[in-house]
Amino acid sequence: MTLLEFPQNFWWGAATSGPQTEGRFHKTHDNIFDYDFDHFPDHYWGGIGPDTASNFYNDYQTDIALMKAAGLSSVRTSIQWTRLIDDLETGTVNADAARFYNAVIDEFIANGIKPVINLHHFDIPVSLVHKYGGWESKHVVDLFVKFAQASFTLFSDRVTDWFTHNEPMVVVEGGYLYQFHYPDIIDGKRAVQVAYNLQLASSKAIAAFRQVNQNPDGKIGIILNLTPNYPASASPEDQAAATFADLWQNRLFLDASVKGAFAAELVDVLTNDDVLWASTAEELAIIQKNTVDYLGVNFYHPNRAQAPKYAPDSLAIDWLPDKYFEVFDKRGVRMNADRGWEIYPKALYDIAKNIQENYGNIAWFVSENGMGVAREDRYLGEDGIIQDDYRIRFIKEHLYYVHKAIAEGANCFGYHLWTPIDCFSWRNSYKNRYGLIAVDVHRQDKTLKKSAHFFKALSASSSFDISDIEMAK
Ligand code: BGP
Image (cartoon, rainbow, N blue to C red; front, side, top):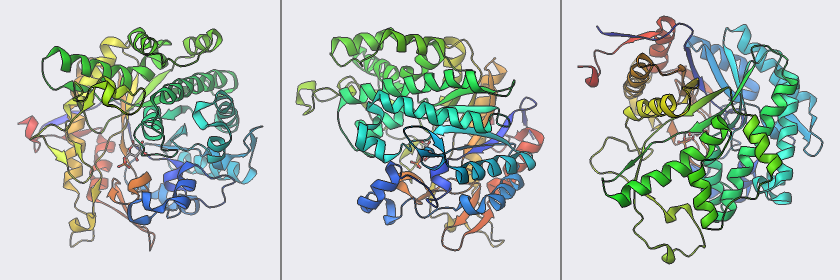
């Protein structure tokens, strides 16, 4: 037996979001996924959309009891803008929604689970996209701040841990570059403005938090999907491609959120290419002043970057960041075939080192990490428990590198698995299951998987035995 021990008070938890669990019940507004599903159901795996919920809205007490049974000491979810706010222009609160989120927060606390609250998890109200162009609009930035302010006012007496956005880069890429989120636009210049406005929204929300937060222990951060870009080769072209990919995918939000300024190298490229965002001195001062208290880091897979194969001129579109890099699948590596993602746990160590060396060793936690597997009923044991040993191995391997980084001084204070209970996953719907707890969405049956029992022991002892894992031998 070789035990890996983690610090006391380490957060052992899991992450989910409002739009992926609550269901559409009783919402005043539709978000972009509600709308997209109503109009293009074939975008969704099996034609199953956000209406088919794991039912947290009605079942939150049962779900939280199951999360407790899985040993979770903290859980991240999000408040839905489309539920909490009645009038999107003025930011008035819907009383039923406030009651619902109050009850959820109280239920978490009563079960000894720290509620960690995120505000924006891809789920902008669709009417703001149609009326103003969504995140392309600075008016929408200010409407988001009203929603944020309402949330802080209502809940910051009990909620101490807040985040502004989940993976803003996915909003940019999905909605404005690669067509996997509504509005499915391909336009690099507009993507650049969306990125800037998302950063501005985060910084303005942080400023609002510092005015209305009621709790001396209150903290606020941003959740970023940081994915190292490993160059395909040592050639200067591939190295330059990886450097730009890192600037664009990671440093854009990381530098602005932690250091209060966008990376000068990125600003130079965007300026030379004549696609730089429209900003004002006053906005840049807000970004400079309102840096994060800490960071959430979502990590699933690394990227491999190489110099683009196609000459920029052959791109039909005026400007795309793909001008500078191309992401490719490396051959012969370990993959999660169901999701098409490479499995490379050491990347978490590289992320930790980067934060330690280049971002003042700011406090951070793994805010999402996980393994989505299709048709998990294949692994149902005779005892009726899904034997998801692959997930336990995945968790252990990633934690091995978190542990190593902490031993070398990384300021990492927790690990959240995606996700507590199998949930709706955007266009993949229910194809890949990530949960510690299985759900049969038709019968609304929820059962602990083998990984939930593992997680409970992990959380109780803040340690685990690594001796069965190859890398430890
Ligand atoms: C992250 C999102 C989550 C979740 C997860 C799994 O990017 O923050 O909301 O969906 O990815 O990915 P997917 O559902 O696409 O398999």
